[in-house]
Image (cartoon, rainbow, N blue to C red; front, side):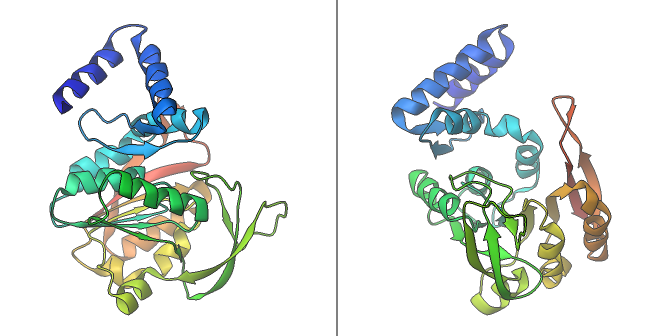
Length: 268
């Protein structure tokens, strides 16, 4: 079955005019079933969807961040502990879990209440509850109370702002902030051997609270979405932990990414 899906996927990509028709067919099927299978040619990952907009987004999860999928495929090994900070509804956490097979753990951190609920639904849907540990947390540089200002209340939304002051947020949620090191030390969560970080501007604070985890030799690679103005701070923080910039992604399909870039950092 996986081989047949891969063949259909490859044909849809190669035959002129067929890709968009195949995409529309997948969206119609997803809306009928309320579930979409993401666009990975071999790994079976399914995401619950409730409307056409989310169906279109999840149908193209691999196409949206091919570098993230390539990093996972290249680096995940059996027995790894993969931390996905800013997991959203869980697409890449689920892919990591599939790549781990029967040996390893994914720690999926997502503070948004609707996205966290969707993350848990998708873990159950894919029968990966023994492989993925979902945590409804905000990670930062110190333990404290804070406010999470939502950009949008729907599951899958992003660009929420910690301690925002712009006003107009549909919900300002009081949240507890922890550091990654505190979660490992106080609650016994396994430290990462691979780390994916996508927190919409909070990356410097998360790294500041993860000094012990970053220093561990077992942590082999880190993938970070980096706000352009935070480039020097992020690169420096990881360099101090002997994690050096190995790859930069600035474009998608030949177009510059808006205000961000992705960096892959490898242990020296």
